[in-house]
Each structure stands twice: as C-alpha cells, then as structure tokens.
Length: 101
Image (tube, rainbow, N blue to C red):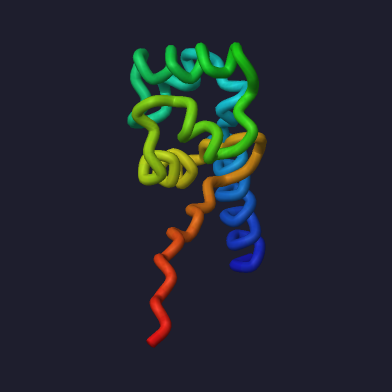
C-alpha cells in the first residue's frame, strides 16, 4: 500500500512539473505575464523580438531582450520556463589566462 502511495505521489509531482513548463517561443502574452518577474513591459519586449525570429537559445533570449540577465534567466528556468524546450544552463565565466613566470 505504501509503495502505491509513493508511486502516486511521484506521478503527481511529475505531472505538476509538466504542467508548469512554459516555452518562451510559444507562450501567449497572458502566459508570459504569468511568469513571476515578467510584467507587461517585458512581455511586450519578448513578443516584439519573437516576431522578428524565434529565440535560438537562452543566450539569444538574454542578448535580445533588454532587462533579462543570466540571473533572471536562471530563475525563470527554475520556475519551469524553457527556450526551445531547454532549461537554462549558465555558461562558465572565462577566467583570464595566468601569465607564465
């Protein structure tokens, strides 16, 4: 009985995760507005940029939409937002080369 309960609970969590996934390239204005941290102004910027061309990836999204930082992109991704179905993955900062003695 306990095993069935755990299986059911895991299924509910999985379904919830699927339900909250929202792709930037297909989201409506209302859906974009529903993202915590995205207001009407940002939604408008996203839609204007998307009319020109779909976003290729998170870096393209960050580059083209003023006000979207890597930190915001990471937060959006944690909340279930994707770009072309992909979650945000921070690119490691390149460190300057160390001079050789």
